[in-house]
Length: 517
Image (cartoon, rainbow, N blue to C red; front, side, top):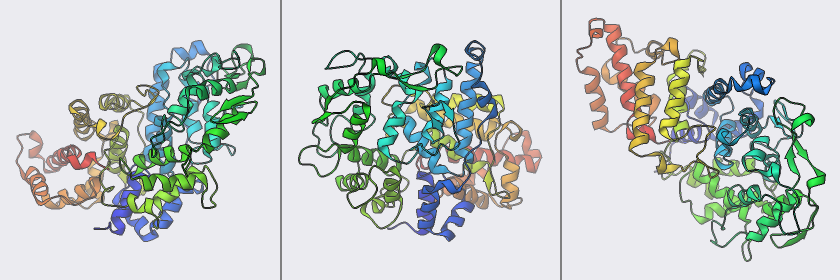
């Protein structure tokens, strides 16, 4: 059965963002699906999230002074990003920042200074200029987060965190076969752009010699350090002509070039013999669709997205924006799959989606029409970080350069227990003054004072699950609400209902249906 308009909008806002309150969904239903897609993709019309002034002020600290505050900075950065995902008016920007963080996985653990990770986060959202080391909100030159992928590869390669993470800052001219360090050149091909083999044709995309030759072109792409560095930590890309190999190079069947631009051009345009679509178009089509749609997409979906990437029908080539528009806008084979029953409620939430989605819905103020921002309360921040670690996705600390393994990999006994413990902490442990849920406000704004158990259950199921409960599930939750309690709060009807509602939230957040987006 095709999704109705409400389900289509709810599905879109879960996948292209982190979910929406029923009030927001109703507003978007009235606006229409195509207009909602336009708002998501043309996000520039809405204000960006505000920077955290505490974090910004630490960017200018001398290294010795900053090192005494490293833990505070990392915790603050985690909180700021989670808060941005909860409160943003540009949900697709935050979702794509998360996408790039996993695709171009970089960890604070491998960097000399965690402030470089903050700059990378701003880079992924289009607010950083690596040539100057400056945060610019926005940077009009930046291709991130959904611009030209050819330029995205260039901005990625110049990113200070990436230069250190994969050692390209050490890469210098050696001989006509290879540079002194090929780590970044390898991952540029294997993980960041095309993969070892074509995702449809299953043929090799490149050779070991292609990697070695690419490492030559990437020599001298380094970062300012020491007296030449005008900042307090290494944050500016620097092209060192003295250590650069000016070619020519032999790469992906072509000979020529004097710099890494030759490599980037070859990568985005590369087609394997006999293939109509580029290897990169198929790779990105696959990665974007499994992120937004469902696992194991059909070859025709991958090829359709690759055609958009390649500009096969007259589109601007290499545009991530056009690929996303194809996924989300009705009227093509890709969007038909995206809005299908197979895709609906079939995506296992990542820990980030689980936490952000829950907080966004439960802390939504119906009067202002916006979710509350995250408090800087230390107990709340510690609860969030411990939950992320326990669920297996500690943001800024991916397990390795290949990123997190998603989908069903998020579900196991250990990770499930961490989800349920977080649900208990946020629902019953933290009070509103500590950044927890304001149950009284939810009850008042939904006219639930004096409501029956079944009315309360229906409101919270609609809020959190946004899909019908089975009759058995609904009845079990109603029975829970009606069951007596030995807790002293039962002597105070208001406190008793508050306690019961908190328990109801915990129960819904532990249901299998809540683990799915």
